Image 1 (cartoon, one colour):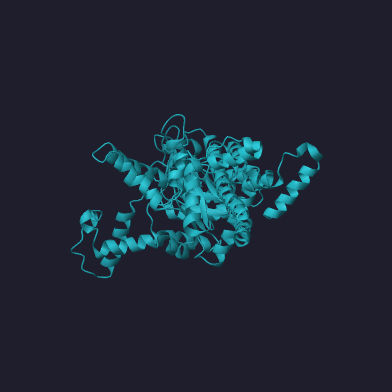
Image 2 (cartoon, one colour):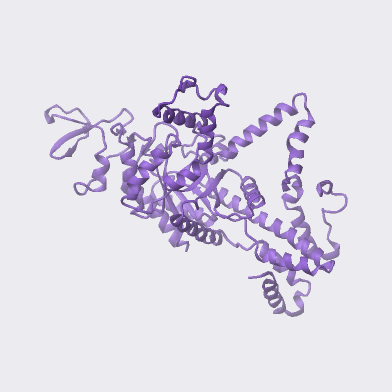
Length: 531
C-alpha cells in the first residue's frame, strides 16, 4: 500500500466516528502505520521466511547469490549493522542477522558470563530475538521519520519535483527487518521442551531456527572438546517438534537448520535402538568402537551389542559415555546430513575444526549424491586462527607444487616476520575470496560470523581505554571515535536522534499540536552535528 493509499485508509477510519476524532490527522496516523508495519513477531516471521525461501531458490539457480550475516548480542548492535548495510550497499538483500547462543551465554545471562554449554536461561534467546526486531523496527521509524520531515519541507517550499521524488522513496522504502537465524542449541531439554521454546522463538519473529545434534545436558561449544551426539531418531524428534511449532503458528515456510557436530564429536550417550539390520540406528551404532568378547568372560555391567552374529562390547568410558571409532567423523557427518534433509530439515550446518574448502566440499559432494540441492549454513568462526590456517594451507599447496619453501617455517607462520611475504599475500587473498569460493565449490548458501561484535567491542574498548587513561586523554575519544563518526557519516554521532528523540518529537506534535514541548529545538546540542 502506498503512502497516499495509507492516508486515504486512515481518513476513512477517522470519518467513521464523525466529529469525535476531529483532532486526529489522517496523514499523521498513516505515517505511524508505515513506521510500524509489522504488528507482531509472527508478521515478521512470515515476512522474513518468504525472503529466506526466495534467497535459497536464487542460490540454487546461481551459487554466486549466497547470503551473509553477522552475529549480535544486543538490539542496538543488530540495528547498526542493518543501518550500515543500507548506507553502504543501498539494500539489505542477502544480508541477515545471526543470533548466537554462545554470545547469549557469555553476555546476556543473569548468572554472569557462561561457557557455551546451554546453562543460560533459555528464555533469554527469544527475548533477544524480540529485542533485535524492536531495534530494527525503530530503525524503520527513524529513517521514515526523516523522509517525512524532508517531504514536509519540500511541500512547504513548493518544490514539486522533490516532493514527487520523496513520495516515490517512501513508497519504495526497504525495511531493516531481515531474517534472523536463531540458535536454539540442542533444544534445552527433550522434544517437548524444544517445541515449546521454538514457539517462543517464532512468536518473537524468528523464521529460521538452528538445532544441533548434541546431547542437551552435555552440550559443548562446537569448537571445544567433549562433544556428545545423540542417535538420529532423538534428533529427528526435535526437528519434527520445531516443524510442528512453525505449522501451529502459521509460519508454514519456516526454515530449519540441522547442525551436526559429529566431525569433532567422538562420543555418544546412548546406543541407538535398532528395528532392522541396516536401518539408521544400526548405521549409527556401526561407528561405535567395539571389541569382540567371550560370553564366558563378561564383566559386571558390561553392555553388549550383536553385529553380524557376533557379540561385541562397545568401549564405555568412566563417564558412562560410549566411544566412536577414530576417523569416522566425516562418514557420520554425511549420514547425519542426509538423514536430516530427508526428514524435515531445510539447511545444514557442519561444524568443522578449520575453514578448508576442500574438506567441506568433500562432505557436501557426498551428501549431494543423495540430496542434490543440499546446502549449508557455515560458521566463519573467530575460533579459527584464519591467518595461520590459510598460511599453512598455502604452504602445503606450494610444497606440493615443488616450490622452494626454505624461507618459511610452517609452525611459525603466524609470526609478524611473514606478514609482508608472498605467502602471506596469497593467504590473505584466499581469505578474501573464501565465502565466494566456498559458495561455488562447497554448497555454502549462507556465511556467518558467530561472534564478531564480541571481538570488535573488546578491540575498540582496548584502544579507547589505552588512549583515554593515558597521555591522549580526551583526544583519544575525539580523534578515535567522534571525529571518525563525523567523517564517515555515521548517523550514531547524533545519538539522541538514534535513540528516538526526533521520532518522539513528531509524536508530541501529533498528540499536542502547537503545545508540544519538543526536545529538538535550537538549544539541543545535537544541532552541532547537523552538518
